[in-house]
Image (cartoon, rainbow, N blue to C red):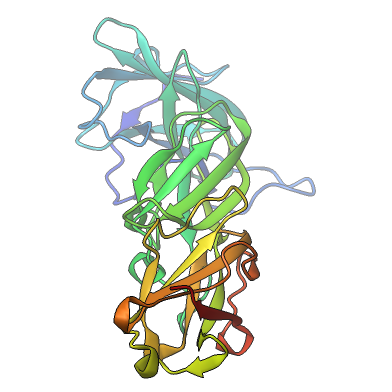
Length: 344
């Protein structure tokens, strides 16, 4: 075959960041002869354009069995377009390798694949760095339905950041909005092509985990894909009601002179969820729901101060027990009843 004529690809084509092969006619099959056509290559470099990848001097295209003009070496931008059109290929299937060359003639990025000519064909490829991991992916996430919203955004879900850990590596903190309802999503670090474990943890501004997902991520060299994960609840809920007794006499908040009641939970390790002070609520509420507790079994403590230096508290030595299950939220109808007795 004669040396290929290189022309600029001037049509407006959007780069997808992966290998895409599309033909201008129907494929050959059932003995049908494949028709000749042009091959248009479009390239990028780890998601970067020619202008962004300033270390790239030129791009080299190799197609076994074919002779290309200038030994297949072209400027990164051909008439301001990141790619070239190679003319008049016979119908058939071809393999190719594309390499990005630096100013020291070193190979910076590379990629390879196949294409089939049946009329004109377009090949978009995102080259990956040489000498290291050669694949990556884009991540998106969403959260379970909440308060009437089928697909709550980060703000409604109460999430500030998502912590992403791949193959048990230290998690990377990513702003939630970067991966919710975005295209293509958040780019992962470079990875060896293959299947990886991935853990996503959605946290609020204090770092408290609300949602979590444990799954897998499959990457392919030169063809970054987008993976979406639906995070599930990492917390559950319960509800607490209280009553007041002075000796054997039941009292109202007003009779006991109680303004605020302090609720606390003791986990299996003896830790207080709300610190030594507890979580304050108006006594007259007579109960409160908790929606964001970590799964586990807790002892419930309630304490309050009344008039005349009186102290009312629940049984700390044998507290009522509640079990919190991720994704389950107990309403007031199933609240644990905690009785406060006057202790002094």
